[in-house]
Image: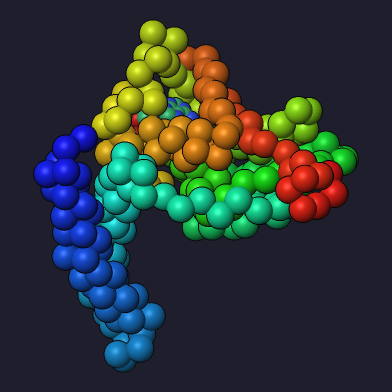
Length: 240
Ligand SMILES: Nc1ncnc2c1ncn2[C@@H]1O[C@H](COP(=O)(O)OP(=O)(O)O)[C@@H](O)[C@H]1O
Ligand SMILES: [Mg+2]
């Protein structure tokens, strides 16, 4: 990449993060403030309008965050802080973050893990971001009231799997899902309404951590997305 192109890319990240992300955060706080009743009581009609604005501002936030992520990845601007990680804790934290969407679709998460699970050696933020994207898809493409299985198992790496019983993916389409801006199905309802960047970001983040991402699916039956990440070795400052 030429210096000029590099500079253009940096200006673009600056533009979306400062000129778009920051004002949007102020808008979101303001809406939350009104909805939380901190400015006095609001009528049901006002609540409906505010909720609509809140939903759309959240959608815009997802798009902006995804764009920032993809540009940070492309210009190698992600600083990884690899550390000893308790994977079950990371999984629980991610599930907790999806609580709102899970409740809206009445989806139960069934967790399974090997009795003895060693520590992983990863950058927690980026692996959490990747796992959230998988959970988000599993929720988005499942029907209301279904179950999602999240499991963790260890061999030469730790594999975290998110399995849903949703619409599944056509085998012919599977090779396309990690491509940028690729959306095979658009679902309106709870979940992050992205622009088809979710899986390409997840793949890049997992690979930056020395891991691997895989998706298996059967149309009409469901999808299993797995990420395999490195284990902590003795030389990396902890017991395995
Ligand atoms: N669990 C899943 N079940 C069914 N289809 C899926 C699943 N995960 C991903 N897909 C398909 O792959 C596409 C790309 O996913 P993603 O990159 O996360 O984009 P987005 O979530 O913005 O649609 C989705 O639009 C969908 O068609
Ligand atoms: Mg997605």
